[in-house]
Each structure stands twice: as structure tokens, then as C-alpha cells.
Amino acid sequence: MENTTGIFLIDKPQGWTSNDVCQFIKRKFKFKKVGHGGTLDPFATGVLVLFVDDATQLSHLSLNDKKVYEGVIHLGLATSTGDPEGEVLGRMEIPDDWNRDWLQSVLNIFLGHSQQKPPMMSAIKKNGIPLYRLARKGIEVDREPRNIEISELTVLDWQRPFLHFRAQVSKGTYIRVLAEDIGLKLSTKASLSVLRRIASGDYHIERSISIDQIKQMNTKEELLIHASLNAVSRL
Image 1 (tube, rainbow, N blue to C red):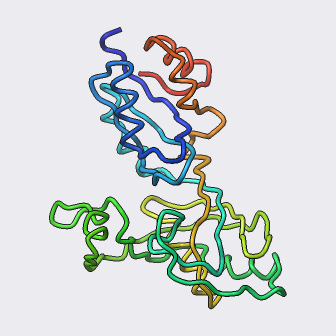
Image 2 (cartoon, rainbow, N blue to C red):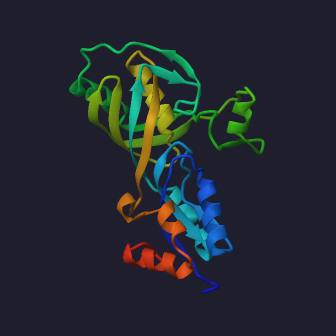
């Protein structure tokens, strides 16, 4: 099966970069090439679409897919990265009269097309250098706003100060920035505390496989069987 190609869904664990997953799969099964269809931050978990060998030429198609996330926004807490990995920059008390219905009405403001400026802690490159490398040196550069679309933004639960939500967004949407913008609209601080991608286009979390499961596999054939049983595309 030297010319094996395929598309597989990984449930990326917390603490792994998307590239960590690609390199792990490549080394373990000795694939020639492994790519992914949309980066997940190390603190985030969930669907990571992997393309191996000749299928990597299709990875750009997945990059354009809408993504669905579920997560938790910590209202009243700001961090340097907009997520749990940054240092705390400030805290604010959240009024005890905020309720789920009112918060939903505020989230509805973000639905539709808009522009969003990418964060410095991102893999976007400036003169060939990823922005996150500049950010770690304390350097901030101008970033061009990007056109985005938010198709769904739903309050799943509200347990002050934690806002549980689900969002369906277009390519290039940064959920960390969205969380911070929601905080601004509410006249408070905000950052993500949890983020999980549950779908990428037609690929859903229910069909994904964990890194622990993959560690138990010994051959490419086992990975292919999993893909076939879970109706994931094979070329």
C-alpha cells in the first residue's frame, strides 16, 4: 500500500499543535506527505481533517469549508492571547442580572457578514514570518481586516461568568477575536476558556478518531479500515 492516499478525521487533543498531529501520523505510518484542512490552536480540541500522500492536493478545499465550534467564553477576564495560554491582563465583575435571553440578543448582533482583524497570535505571515513569532517578541504589526461570515451564534448555557456557545463561521474567522469582541459589546473583558471544533464542512466529530486510538494501530491498513467504517472519503 505504498501509494495509499486518504482523508482522515482526527479528534485533536489539547496541547498538540495541528502540525504535531501531522508529523505524528506521518512518522508512525511512514506517509510521504500529511497536511491538514484548517489549523486548530494548541489549547483547542476537535475535528482536524488530515490529508495524506496524493490527497494533500485537496486540502485547500477543506480550508474553505465553514467550521462549527462549541466553547466557553470567560466574561470579565482578559488575557494577552485571548485564550487560557496567555497571561491575565485584567478582570471585571459581571452583573448578576445578566440572563441568557439578553445575552442571546447581544450575540445576534454578530450574525451575518462583517470584517475581523486577525490577532497577532496567529500563523498568518508578515514578510515570511508568522505573526505569533513577532508577538512573542513583543512586536505588533498592522493586519488587514478580513471578510468573515457568522451563520450561527447561539447561547448554549449561562453560568456567570461563563458563557457556553455554539458558532458556525466562515473560513478565516478567529473565535478568540470574536470572544473579545463580544466582551467589548457587553462593556466588559472576555477571553476563551474552552474551544472545541465539532465540524469542518461535512466532516463531523462523531466520525473522528483519537490520538490514543491511533497509538494502538500498527499499520496503514488499520487506519484505512477506520476511515472506511466511518464513511470518511478515501481516494
